[in-house]
Length: 241
Image 1 (tube, rainbow, N blue to C red):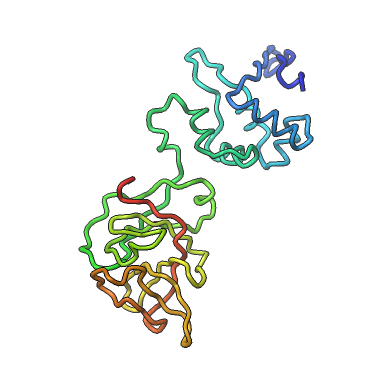
Image 2: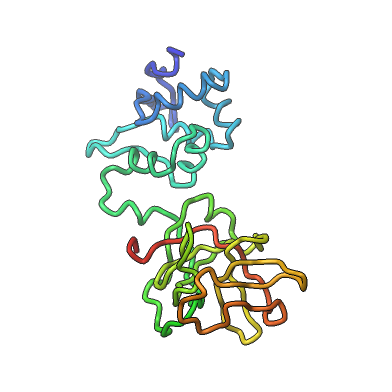
């Protein structure tokens, strides 16, 4: 493995002018070398191919701090996402290592639109000031996720409550199964967040917190549902927004 960390030989570029390749001193090279040993691969290019990481992108990640200002030569966020999968570490860990000089790291994260309000009980509808919400790269790459702002507390119960003011992330390709928390579009055109249940007459929607002051019935039959928009895959508490 010693050849991975030695200074590369002088090469030529353009009009025959020499270019000296820098030492590989990236911020996570120790993890990359360990992952290569784990996978039984000795060459970075082969390891990049195995994990779908561009060879040049991996090289960028491994080069490290090079500029006179001391900033990282660093890969883009999609490369970091693939690298996180290969290294089996959280994406946020790599972002913090490569972008430690940025004050607003959240600006790097992909975002999905908040497309409107979803009723989980009663509550007054108002303009949504936030138009987008940052999400993990794996959610963004699905291409099927949207967000809703919650009004009301009819789902504010149980081990995973959804309460007034929360933002929920919904996967529109996953319609959920019995017991899932889903968003549905009703025959009147409004959206609700409920639990998907099954009974003798088929599927229906039910509130998790029937004691709340609901603007919709606690139980909504399938005949009142136009479509299941998708399963709720994440809840952002209003306290964390």
